[in-house]
Image: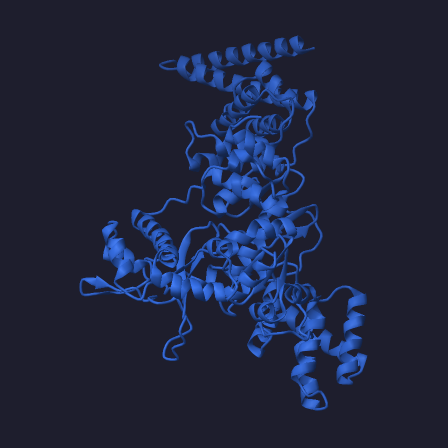
Length: 621
């Protein structure tokens, strides 16, 4: 088994589906035999990104960005080829010891590197204060153990303690060589004069990590209640800092592998809720750090390629937020269910249920899952007095958007009857309201146009290709798919006039020679070129891959490979090459001659060319 990263990439590509990989990042819709999406690489409004499941390649017909699953990730994440291979493997759940190298973070400035380094040191220092100081053990550690947290849980979640002396941590960081400006960018405090104090002093610290496991900020919880201060202090979003609450899901880094493996992930509200769920053996859990849910969170969840299970607090704001999140998830193609809101529980959140009822109570609570429709009906049945006509209309208004999006007729009948039973409105009234809502949505909504099940239409060509260019393009197309065509090329041509086609033909020959393989695909070749570094910069690779995907998708509708069709192309190419040679010879030989002499020379060259063509045709018979 080879340790070459290109070989590893090829092995992984054979085990993944490009549609699954791309749909982990953006919304993908089926269109005929292919799939389409809004292109993330330019300001796209109509689906211009086409994905071929058959060939396992993608191409945008507007910005020309193209490639395979690995190159998509490489461009989308702006990362190295190696990191892209590793990400594709993670999405597909492929374990490969050869990919255990440390992930190289995208190219960042030296200032940001210092901020990241400082954040890592701060997290370690907070952990050290918790265990290695008397204050930390008597205050922070006691608080955590009283809450039932084991040392293993504390370490896994990177929980620490900030000393009451607000100067202690900044002084340690200054001794390590960090500047006041770098310390300020971490968000632990602001510079005043020539000093900086730790705003988290005297609190238990939760380190917050991004999707790659890098500490990006902190949340500090009170131990002794002080109503003049917030229970939690989160890192601010400082200028030059790296903490952005809207694109962070707490515990995402720890949860993502188990979520992909188990095919589901729980979403809870707070740190202690996530930790409570983890403590009962369900490690695939993330927290919103509040109830705000964003498009960046959807992006992170889509990457997991699993079912989402919503489990926010059992109070009004939490339940309202769950319904709002459902509406955001509806447009994302992410499957989801909700923890039942009709249960009799031992607390308003996961942490309280575990504390009051124990592990079994929390597990039972989490496993009682509902569809969105049942959840909404339960919620409004409890919230509203349905003996009141106005409240019945509220329930109807709130439930119609859900009914309008259902396509299964059995589900439509089930939910329509449920709504009719609760409100007393007839099935006919409910159905008419649904149709009215659907009609309005179709008129207003221009972003989510329904895609017909038709073939992808290639964009209009800017120009017609010459016979020579079309023949050379056809030769390259045959070589992309067939090793026999590579042999024929080497035997009968070995050279193409067009620079870009000649370069691709040379790369194909090089690939076949280096890989010693009898079969290969366009996907393999794109992977080879994407990972290939000698003499090719990224811009050149993109240009070559753009041409390859266009040819492979057969945008000029060339016939399938056969020796006869290959030889027809060879004939055209040789004729054109002979014509160019004759034309050059004529220009060189006609210098200083009269018009009569030029005419005689041209006639002689034409006769010679005809004789060569006749001889070549006889030789091919």
